[in-house]
Figure 1 (cartoon, rainbow, N blue to C red):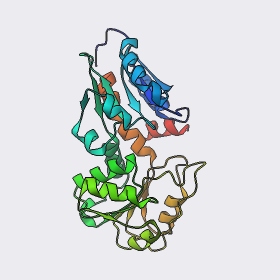
Figure 2: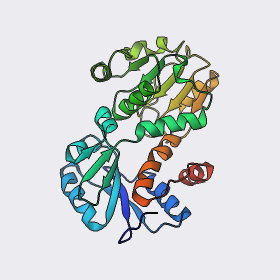
Figure 3: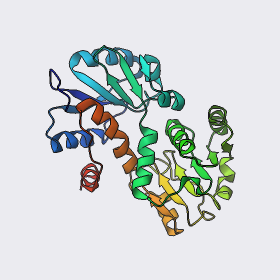
Length: 279
């Protein structure tokens, strides 16, 4: 357990932020393990981000999570950036060090991988190509993780092709860019299929690519977790695929930050999941 001179504070910075389930998660863990501390949501505008990060350590904050629209911006404001955050081009976890420096990391890829390992334990990353929909920050974290574990080919489709082309430039020859309108024809032999877009999220348009040709042996993951069971996952399940929802990624990506801030590695289990879902 970390011995703080005062009650440690942490939180999540974004705009908007009211929808975030991170405060429910971290405050549940604090209570569960009897740790004195607090985790709060903070709606911070882009223009105010440098000043906010400068002030938080002085107010007793030991770190924070970062979400949209700040995940890329914080890299330029951090004093120390991990290799994986630099590779992904975004950070989601900040540590305010005792020497005054801001340490930026990205745990999204680790959270994504832990979610797959926990909920599809038979998944073999080397068994065939992966199909990834989307080319934003989440896609970058997912692609980096897939390359690290040995996925042989990553087919990437984004509604704006230029963004997908940019990721191929950054990540190299394992990436094959596929036009969005042709992506359905690249699912027949894909062993892993991941939606990293916001399509299917509450108040967003539905995922609009047909899964009629999907490989029934594929492991299919949707990073969206509101709702938990998206139309994308329902269609994949109806085709016989193993499906993994996005809530587990949220839980697993949070655990390393909690450990660094509060000194205890939390368990990601059914009780944690039920609490965050409000059950």
